[in-house]
Length: 407
Image (cartoon, rainbow, N blue to C red):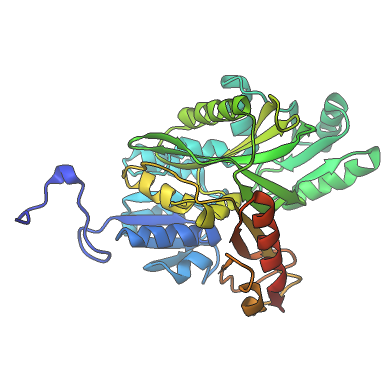
């Protein structure tokens, strides 16, 4: 017989819009937030999508939407007090994290934690935690706030080196300095690509890695889980394609998991983390693993999991947030993703070529619905499976190549 009154120990929730609904406030409504929204709605959660511009991808799916300046703590607080969310879920870096810390101290649930959001939104906080507090292997690094400090940092690190703003997204402001002639341009580009008010950069020693992987790590009610490693290729500091699994020596795989668990345990909370690692050395022999970065949310390279796994990174994130068990994460077969980029600027982009794209065996398309575009903005992704990693990559790239973004 049905219970006349819900048992509080069951953590019940009502339908979206009801007085007993569980509300997820998504701070950042891009393509990753869009998939989080869909997975949350599949579990009957109420979703409120927030971003700095209207009609962002997740807003087109959510129950309600709001446009605010997320670096304005007063606006975030006003919205939280109005919507009374069960979970506050940051999905972008540029947020007033001091307000999230205050809200968490007052009893609001910030995913995974306000501290994790604050530390990972800037490269200085997370690098110091990983290298200095947790003793994880990283490339050598220095921080610089003035041009004089920047030049001194390069002199100490040596060439080649990598320059990044301490806060940016999608590779903006990131460049490799190989010669003295590159130094001035890299400084200007880093400041131009910085998000927020921080005019500070990290200068990193160049690691001659064999590959770069994303290890999606899930902290949930029933333990910590790892997805099979995801390899990826970047251009201009931003991802262009990814594939899963990425072959690793067993000892290397064990070290990757150790590093990922160490950093995510230190950050705490429940949810999915994208841990980026450099792998140096040839496949088939023990390799050296370097910690690079971590984001406390789904990762763009992890979009491949929408086709390759039994549960995508977005479903895993929502399950963990809601306190639900994860169980087994299974790989269907090798999968790959390839991005679809805009060739220029438009306030009304259109798409063509989808019919031809979907003639590629096993292919799928995800067009994000961004209302505007600029040069090289990510507008969609092609997904494909294969009998081998190479076949999956070839199919995804071919599928993506057929889709045209019309300006």
